[in-house]
Length: 257
Ligand SMILES: [Zn+2]
Image 1 (cartoon, rainbow, N blue to C red):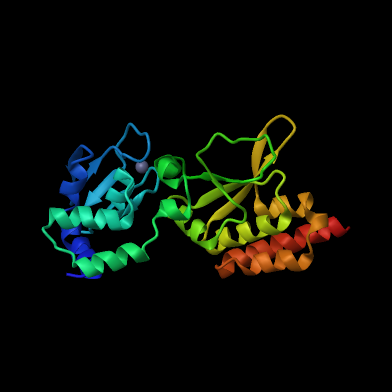
Image 2: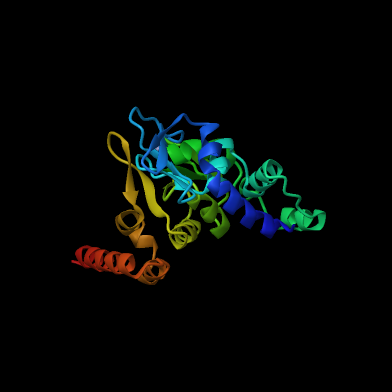
């Protein structure tokens, strides 16, 4: 069958089989209609990791990790999507057409190709729920204690999409980087529904600021009002956007007064 057909079949068969597959990695106990165990994606003493064959998914109420059988193996084994498909295709004796195999391999750029370093860090990123994005050419000395990837500025849309697979929050380390690539990076991140913080050196420690709080006082003089509005317009969700817009205009008024 084709690669796409194989994905569908695996979602179906692997979904029904998800309790057995997860049980290869996690000690599970029956709980209601599903199974429960200690989450493999974060440290915990009381089980909050649930697996349900009926619903064909796993979900941790401790760290928020969740998904289908493909997501589980992807994260557990650190494999790319297509690698999981080939692995499970073997398990279910599915033969993927050679031509289809070739073309899907060509089509799929692995996460590691898009964002070098993600493979080594992704388990930790999921565990911690945040990733630091450092920029090549950064002259700052500050380093947060969190998993980190380094990109050539700006962060691209594809790179932001890869990060979004593992966490909803990123934190930029911007020391010494010009505003235009920082702006494009913020835009790529918020367009992929990432919450963006910026690392900010304080008096006695380093802490994170939300990007909007960062840009107004810190680079306020170097950016135009139009640029901030452009960034705000990139926020996909209307409600969030209106909150940011209100926040922005309030801050702008304060700064002007
Ligand atoms: Zn968890």
